[in-house]
Image 1 (cartoon, helix red, strand yellow):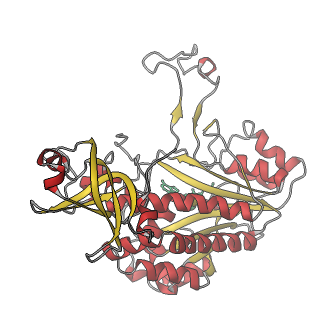
Image 2 (tube, protein in one colour):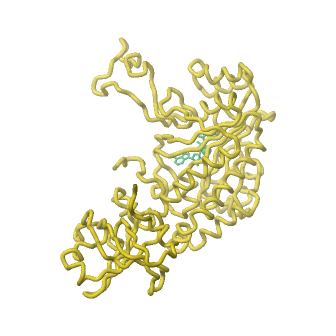
Image 3 (cartoon, protein in one colour):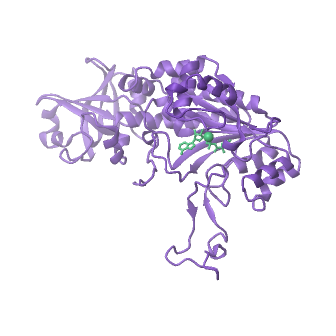
Amino acid sequence: MISHQYIKQLLQSTDYNKEVTVKGWVRSKRGNKNVAFIALNDGSTIHNIQAVADPNALGDELMKRITTGACLRIAGTLVQSQGQGQTVEIQAKEIEVYGDADAETFPLQKKGHTMEFLREIAHLRPRTNTFGAVLRIRHAMAYAVHKYFNDKGFFYLHSPIITASDAEGAGEMFQVTTSDLNNPPRNEDKSINFKEDFFGKPTNLTVSGQLEGELAAMALGKIYTFGPTFRAENSNTPRHLAEFWMIEPEMAFYEIGDNMDLAEDMLKYLVKYALENCTADVEFLNNMYDKELIARLNSVIENPFKRLTYTAAVEILKQHNNKFEFKIEWGSDLQKEHENFLVEHHKTPVIITDYPKEIKSFYMKQNDDGRTVRGMDVLFPWIGEIIGGSQREENYDKLVKRMREMHIPEKEMYWYLDTRKFGTCPHAGFGLGFERLILFVTGMSNIRDVIPFPRTPKNAEF
Ligand code: 4AD
Ligand code: MG
């Protein structure tokens, strides 16, 4: 049985004069030779508990070891606090040092550190207020995703991480092999003999669980995946990771409008969940970094998202082409500056649908105009694209034709095509980038600061 209390509960307690024990890491120590104030944090909350210690009773030897970063057990009496900023504190009777933190070398001293510096010490940055808040919010959002879908009758599907297919057809994959790269097995014509490799064929880390998700949706009705995805795109931006987590719901009998409704409802639910359940952490981030964070979150919950077609969006953008570095015309992909403009222009998140087929994946449902597909992107203030999705092409012949046009290996994808052969149905789904959601909810400015250990080009430390 755990015999200590968690700071989160103690700070709400009115059980004055009770004997308590807390265990955690020192955030700061101040005072003089007659009294010391120790701020201790155990990760259960952004708030510290203050322990008041008498150096004369506890001894200099011990007091010297109580430095920022040290790990302590403090036993004492919970009392109403005399000081400002907290309701309770602990009159320390006994302090045990579990682990010292040498003040000369412990890198997290009290002063503010830059995000860049903290990234270099990502093994220690969870000990800061900021990363504690971000990681607690990240946890709460993962929980809320599962709760949302479970409550709506979706089933959580574990799609594979190692796969032989390229779901997005963009070729941005990390290969998986056990062959000796210095001396791989070769065919007579010197090409690599993948038959000798572990899986007997070329494999890679998945870029998306969608294709497997579709297989399951056509049996279970409504499913979602939530797992790591990998993209070997050389994008060094504040919005891209090489390893990120994606949530991909896929629903039989949903059409594009239903898909948009679900995306909007889910995003509002998640943002609301964060405001209601991560209040202290969100308030901390709001006050510390971004005074408009909470207002921005509320605005997303309160206002309906603006929905418009790609063609309508391009019409709007064309009138402002003088403002853009990339001049837009029908057919070109939207750049970050265009996405920002649309969101600013409408003062709400925007959902864009019916993109030119050339700039979207092979699996999207083809519109009757022959030029556009029933894709949808949800654009968010601050973030840009947070969700990408579509209604899927359920017609076998149309799908095969498009795959051929786009050089998607039809033979190897027989299993995907089989769903269109046997009991096909209208269906739709989307992918939410989990880290982009966390970026939005925390107001952090770089995606590397919302995942514990970011993987980006030339960086796989820790
Ligand atoms: O738009 P994307 O590429 O869509 C898909 O992968 C579809 N298979 C989803 C589906 O329909 N089931 O990616 C979906 C989302 C993006 O909107 C973005 O939020 C996020 O995944 N994303 C990334 N996040 C971080 N780093 C990257 N490199 C990302 N690439 C995409
Ligand atoms: Mg996309």
